[in-house]
Amino acid sequence: MAEILEGIRVLDFGRYIAGPFCAALLADFGAEVIRIEPPEGADDRYLMPISEDGEGALFLQSNRGKKSLTLDMSTDAGRALQDQLVATADVVIANMPAGALEKVGLDYDRLKAIKPDIILTVATAWGMNGKNRKAGGFDGTGQAISGAMLLSGNPGEPYRAATSYVDYSTAISCAFGTLAAIIRKMKSGEGSLVETSLIGTALTMTTPMLMEEATGARSRVATGNRSPIAGPSDLFAASDGWVLAQVIGQSMFRRWAKLMDRQDLIENPKFATDILRGENGAELSRIMAEWCGSRSVQNCLELLQNARIPVTQLLSPTQILEPERGLSEAFLNWMQGPSSTSPLPVARPVAEVSGMDPSQARPAPVLGADTFETLQGLGLSKDEVAELRSIGVV
Image (tube, rainbow, N blue to C red; front, side):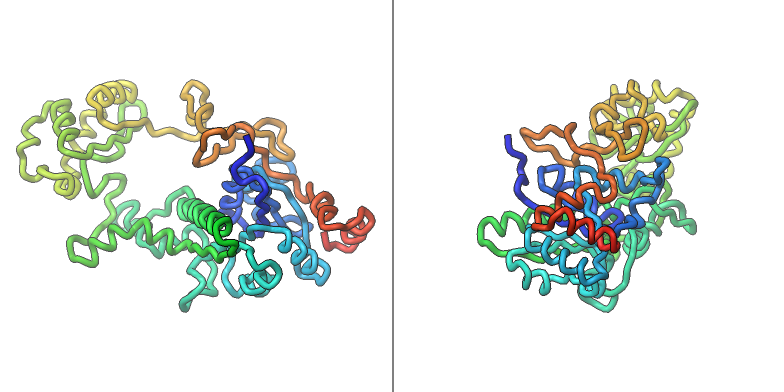
């Protein structure tokens, strides 16, 4: 079976997560993705180093399945090669402010002049319009500006999420928009400019809170791990670890109250609805905490699962990788990194389509591994590539 995006060429000029992970998702579906970076390697290649050669965990996750081409785009020869590559591409991906796009010759008008049906997918921090359009930003920028950070942690002690959820969600949005643009091109022959932003993604996730604020329904405050919209929904300490339990809906609350031997809570008007149980959740969490504290994690899991209440153990990274849990086998591919001595866990595609073999994804590429092959495809000879390499263009 042919891969879904076979024949689609993607040039990836992205860095860190939003752009590169978008390109990795397209590679998961069979697109030919060429990562382009300076001859010395881009900074994001070495973030969170885990090998003797310095390859970073972030890079290995966000660049699986790609080819690697080195190119100094600040030189005239490098810019000319960049333009030749664009002429062969279907999609160009970059995550940088609008001004930076123009500086490196990747703005949409310039690319259209080279290839009229090109698709340019751009992930910026603040969007391509508005007073902050030239400003940069990272995942934490979105967490902070969207209100999410203030509503995490405890009152007076905001917390940033440990994972870069804004970056990864923006990357998924980029891939979604790019696929829509590819379908449009198949139907009409027209190219597209696909725009996403970290701030737009982050605000999408806090929009329900903004609606509450705008209507005067309520003003949110941080509540630790306790949910403000239902309860009991919190992280609880057992005698030998932690469990997360989430009770949502009337029938589930009734089952939970029966398990706690607290049927009186069912008729209590303070706990009549999900929102009231969220607003008065501190009392419910105290009841649940006392119940969990005298039991082991395993006992909590068994009793809550038998009552059909969603519950899970809080795991460490070490525990996640334990074979007996089955998480590694179901959700991770073990790949050989460019210079690692042992296989590394890399997340499987976030979506799988019939006919895909998610275990066949290629690892992230060695720096410049595909430079000669790619430039040969543009018509350059071995000697011409060697000359470009000798003067630092590739």
